[in-house]
Image (tube, rainbow, N blue to C red; front, side, top):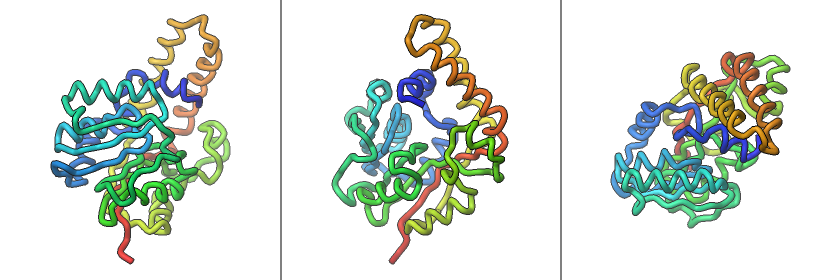
Length: 248
C-alpha cells in the first residue's frame, strides 16, 4: 500500500506491527539492555520500541524512518516519556541510511525487511552498523503452513517472499547469524493489529468523503479485511527474532 494509506491505517497505533506491549517488554528483557546501550532502529515507525526501552532501561537510540507523520509522533512520544535527550530520529530512507560501522549494541528492523529487498538483504544492511558481538532484532512474517496459491494474490505477497519458520532460520544461518531467541505473535495479536485498522480506516472514510484517495482507501480497507479473514489468520505468522553474528 502507499505510504499515505499506511499512515492513515495506523494513525491510532503506537506499535506498528502485531506485537503487543507485554511482548515488547519481554523482548527488551531478552536483550539484556543496560543504561547506555546503543540501538539503531531502521524503519522505526512511531519509535515506540526506542522510547519505551529508553524509559525502562536507559537505552540511547537512533530511529530512522521515511514517514514525517510517524516521526512527528515518535518525537512527541519521547517527549512524553522524558527521554528526548537519549533518543533522536532521522527522516531518511532506512535502506540507504549510513552510520558509523560497528557502532551499535543493537540494530533492529522490526517488520520492514522491504528496506533491503527482503530478509537476507536487510540482514546485510543491519550488519554494517552493528558491533561484532551485538544483537540484531529482525521482525518478519513466515508461513505457519504452506498457503494456497490464491493466498499470495489476496495478501499481495509475491511468491518466495516468506518461508516456513524453520526455513527462515536457515536464511539467518546462511547470512552468518545465529538465532538466539524469538517472540512470536499469536492470532489475537494479529487480530488486534489488523482489525483495529479497519475501524480507523472506516472512520477516516466517513470523515473525508471528498478526499481524492477516498475510493482507493475504501478498496484498500475491503481488501485488507477480506485477505486477513480468508488467509492471513490461518497461514501468516510473524515474529521478532534475536540474532547474533556467528563466530568465524
